Length: 559
Image (cartoon, rainbow, N blue to C red; front, top):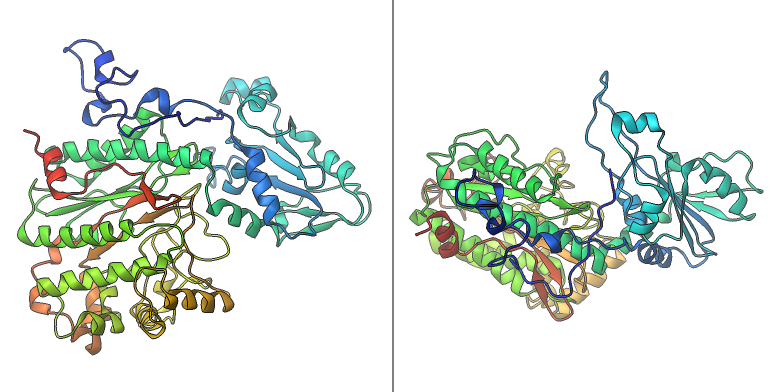
């Protein structure tokens, strides 16, 4: 495996390959008599831009990490990289996946490495394995010392066999070795004096550093979005000719691979009808028809950086009255939340706003009744239809680290008191989507009302709520320039979930019109998700996939 490092061009416009003869454009692939190519089903990103290389900014990243350590920190940061793994009782194994904290400090995406950083000397060394020629015969070569030096701006590159000797020689009495986990500490034979192994300081330092992305990281996430966006358009353009969920998955994954993105950031979700109401559906093997909607939640990685995009498409090529109404509701939720993004906004206030819009729309449709928007939100009943958080950070993980504060949930993994839904279900929340309980939503709304929050994420009440959460050790995060977050509202009709926790609970059932609900069960759900970069004065949407109804239908039904 080789290091793949890329550079953002001085000026890049979305779909910059349109109308040009890029190396991957149809104009350069011969005459009319040819077989179909993956690029025929969507405008591919400009290949020269996509694959342009620059050095990985390892020194910039490690300097950020060092600045987050305690002021008295003294010694060496040490991280081992990941090794190849094998399945039990097998000579085969999963695809290699580098440890993300290690990658953040090195840019090295192959096994058997380590990294050290001398805090006093400001000296960063990447330690790589020597590859025996017999290994090359069977498995290929890894980058040489010279190739690694050319691809990442570490201070030195050495062979990993010497790392323990280096640490022993470099440590001074009383210095510490900073590691992520106790089992990752180096095995030193003859250190100078007593060596302290610090297993507490490094992880929060790295995670705090990773929250706000560097220019290089933004460039990689932008590329992942460009490939994934084109793959979504390719899948949408083919949908009318497909018969099974697995075909959507195949088109999306195949398109990404054809562009050079071999890895998906998470398992592809292609769920039609009621399956669209399962948040982490992964069977992808059911017929599309006679259902109305299919949710395609899929995003590739580029150079280890993730993308995360969701669209909900009308399988028949048109929207029924009910389908159009729910789609419009979710589109409004997403559009209004995205428009509110700017530095200083408390992200949880955006979730509340999405809930308010959802209530307004479901009241208009008669699915909710017998109460005002405020009464329904005070009970948290809307959580039955919008049961997950509005979004999360995106970076080296699809659900990236959030640092000292959580973007939406508190440090214990929930927005508030865990009532109504049993703890066994709450354990699902640390996954790609976080479970939002009705009791939690009610607490958020009461806090906003009591403190006089204006719903824009910057009111006096929101500021006071933020301070209170910080003092309690939790905290709901304010957006900062350079963060990349998703905005992914949804409305779902999961029959089992609604019946068990809402329709059978009198104070929730009071607000839900069971008769009106019958018209919507087969829709399953609608989710729309984009990756949003927080800029100095607002935001930039990194995702470029049709979401307006007219745009979706135009791609599905070209004239």
